[in-house]
Image (cartoon, rainbow, N blue to C red; front, side, top):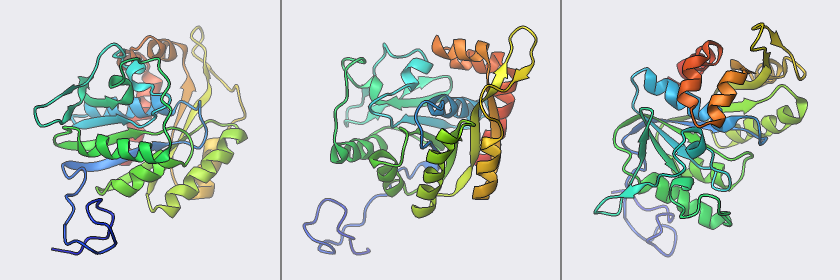
Length: 274
């Protein structure tokens, strides 16, 4: 057995025990980290849509909501009123919804409207619990929905997850979002997480009456960001009223089924993480 690095939590100094740590997520083939440097760009919707798209392709998929301060996944799937259960050996059981295994702090709190006020070390401990103490079972993909930025949650997960992983970066066309996403790309480079590509969200507006696509913000930002970083532009997701209304009502699955544009673009994203 190999010597412990001192980070297992059971030894007081580096190299003072011979315990070999059990791999985290040993039954998960690949983790997909959905990241963005800027909040409000639709990252959670992209993460949920990606998980559902992969599940529709017959993959075994888990979705972990790591945004402790603003968990959106329970709302997108209309399960905010439900709570996760436990097993006899204190394992947490994911909520099964839309063919995926969903885990969110919003499904564990007594009051879903209560504020989560945690410092960094607490967040790292909770992330470790959600990775180790959830009955994930065999998964082809675990999609992780992170809060904006490159802080504790993103760094902790990258350090803890030991299965193969890649990142999908979500931006909008404006420079204010692109500037923060460039930092996100640098973060992935520093922690050695391969970037599958860029998703440009809010890429124009699809008129529900005429079906034409109109630019609302500056255009081409996602393409320029991808070209500068040397990665793929995976998708350009427009603002489509029918899809957005369905998501707001907790019917993201129906929204994907109703939107040919969004569903076809998300299939491109799914192909890139395979």
